[in-house]
Length: 67
Image (cartoon, rainbow, N blue to C red; front, side, top):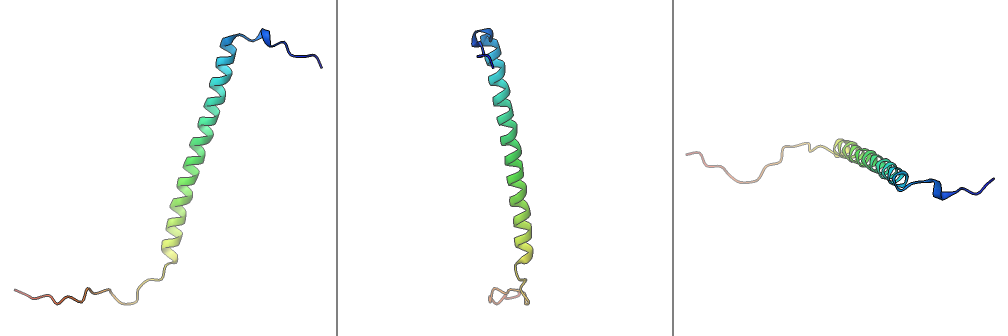
């Protein structure tokens, strides 16, 4: 295998490659963030459903005086 001649790449080629890398990393970060938020939402729904529901209504033990 021959050695790659790096002088054949112009600065514009390097900028394009850098932009592609940054773009892909940005997309991966966006999808990871969306997946994490979705996982948190699903977890909160599942954990709220698994909590025991009170059998009696909660009262504040304050007598209310009718006027």
